[in-house]
Image 1: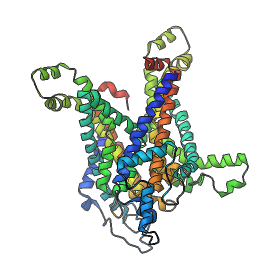
Image 2: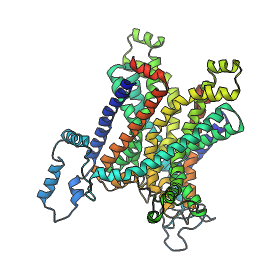
Image 3: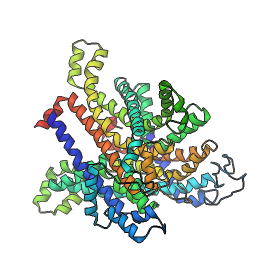
Image 4: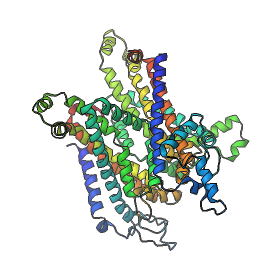
Length: 271
Length: 326
């Protein structure tokens, strides 16, 4: 374990603790407004660690609750893409033929499409809320995982232990799930850890554009929307939420890279 | 070569059909019908007028039939009219396209001119201070929410230092400037949007050119060149660089989808009058024909970009052409 991985793990654990114990960590009610002129847009102080927004709400407390959104979207979206990616990639790599052809064409389409536009479209038309955000990010980010799993399956299916299982009359489903999949999971975990950061980035961008988590529910992205409106006056609205996103994504990436080096020291070169 | 280009060009067609079909189906999942968005609750518009509108766009037909009709009109670049201002979609898009192509083109150029040298120096001087510093930067680049970076740029260079304008492309006063003045003003307005757009691509491309260089440095022909007694400079410039740069061309093409995705955010933040902002506004207004048009044109641009990079790759690397012929 190198220092980078320890740093990443430390930040992720701190974020997870904050998310779970949000009511205890928050110093104010994240939704409580105070519209008196002196309460609005206060600079950071001992009373409000990260200042207040244009409606007099405490930014620190809003960010504490925003941690829940970012982490849950990141994890659930990646879980969805993991299920789809492993399923399609596995079938594609194991059976080959027309299944493989079809799946790979869809993957190519996903690669050539400005996916963010598709996500924006679907979210708007289905209604912007956190569940839709998780589902849509999951449904649009499995292509990389699918390719990876397929490549693993292509090499593993030729191995002797698979042939021996086939000769013994083990069913295809059982071979895929019990014999090949466990051997293919290493790189999948690496890739999934790295995608958590990506999903958090997409969620924050969507919330920033008003297409993700809807106000008044706080998320790091929608605090930044307020930050943009008062950018020439209230720098704290822009600095802190962005820093939180950056640190969280960086931490997941560091853990992912650490896992990759663990699995294959030869790959140390690749970032 | 000709057959390779034609083959590659033909691949665009099924991709475009697939993508436009996915978008078409999504639009039909959306609640509400275009007729009521077009006319809203306007009591002056009778039921029969709504029915006429629905018939004109074939809204009364099944989805597959509608898609076929849409496809037929698409071939002549007819995307219908905007539900908001009734202008033809294609002329709306064409009026916004130059701004987007300018922003993306300049950004691509900046990415290439900055990332490739960083990668080359990092590979040649491995584990030097420069290499370590850029590795840290690359990690930061992967984790950076680029729209936040855009906000920070606005905050720092726009408001604190007041060096660059924070929004728009060509304000009213440019009409009074001469040609040179206009170009200067345009570049001045481009600074922040390009910085934000290019940053996302920098990390990936510099990393890629670094590993591509390292790989080329380990080849036997490098050993031969060194054994011949060539200077290190000549070995790098004439032998390594040439081979390492080849795959980078392809990667440039593959960064396009991400760049175009970014344009929807950055053009909104910087009030850049391009296609990305048009698309965002159309989505927010449920302006279906414009959404569909922007989506398809954005995809088409991406596919053309990837196609061009593939063709350039094939032009400079004869092995690709040979593979394709077989």
